[in-house]
Length: 605
Image (cartoon, helix red, strand yellow):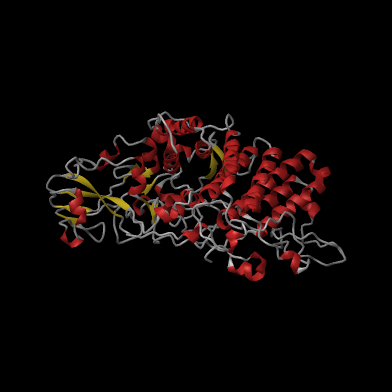
């Protein structure tokens, strides 16, 4: 019988058929792509690659940590991202309720990459050796990315390098998990191959050799922290005893060195975005300008291709859009990483402001470019945040906030139309507890919001700005963290001060690990990194131990014609928690049902 190569991926053809299974026929099938059709042309390989790229575990605008990676339209996903479950933002869901994950298990995608790696060398004559080598390097990068998505969730997983034959005996298909250390080593080796084989440049949305080096710096930093901090803060069990989770502490510096070396490879090839002398506008544009020298690897979106996202719509109040439903808002806790806001006098009384925008005076440009403050403007409209009205105000801020709500003399309202003595009680942009389209912390996200987009076109699935998955700013942070863990404080200081200079912040005169981590939090806010940082540093069970976060509530004082700001619990009043077992997710139960050799499961599952 004629053997047709099996592809798990479904590749559409003109009449809507697809490759989904082996065909046993004595004549060549006319409705199935055979290997020669796919691999004898670079365009065919690129078509195959497209789905592999689409399914990469990139935690982008559409990623939901409880549901996974969204690739289609009609998404209301943005309001529940990693930032909204770590205290960077607060969203509609309380606590750390994503510890169990969503059952990520991309071995179908890995099979596609394995098929690509196995087939490409057979088609050198049609593609040329250089093309095959470059595509193989790309495939190794992609395989590493998929395994990274697994390793940071589960620790050790089965390392499968070749397409499995579905007709093989079950005993061959039911593979065992590899140790966590072996899994991270495999990912590192794959990225080394990607670096060696890929060219220096690539089309937007595809990887090149420096994307491999950049990803390796992220990956090895994660592995290093598992070795160092996971050796002292862990949950014991059979999986740990067998090395399926956990890495010996003695390996930490090996991984830190690998992370540092990988980050250093990008020096001179990428640079921080510094096109605008206005530090605020420069940082805003970093996330919106195409062709930035900082962008290493991006994910693209298109209205025409039905892949557009909804970031502008779901991060903005309804007042600023055609049809918004914002539900995730930055916390005061995040804002105060930059330092305490000057809203209280020395005697504890609230400072009075003539205009809410005065609050932004003297703040670091990067902070103002990351978060919309009261008084900021977008699309010709002002963020008029106002929680309520005080007919008069006396006493200290702390004493007022400590009162029971029914003991406070403020005036609140149930909608934006309510007036008190002729003045609107709450702002068109909140804060408010009665609806999902207004802030409940006093802030909105600014990072990635397209300020050039007309208000009428800000709607669901109408945003096309790329997600910057790997950028040079992160690489400098990776390099600094690895350097300081290795005792190279000088290099760490240089890397951090490059970022602080671009941010409009005062350079540091000295450096330590706490400063490096703090800088990382400020620079990468809302980029879905902090959740994984908390996990790899093994501090999530401390930082998120019955944690509550705060907002900054603007009030109008009627008899003074002034504004005041009070630090109060955010209006969701969510409590966050994190159990130590959540440092690893459970191996999905359905996969264990198909393959009992995946046991033992991770500790406490």
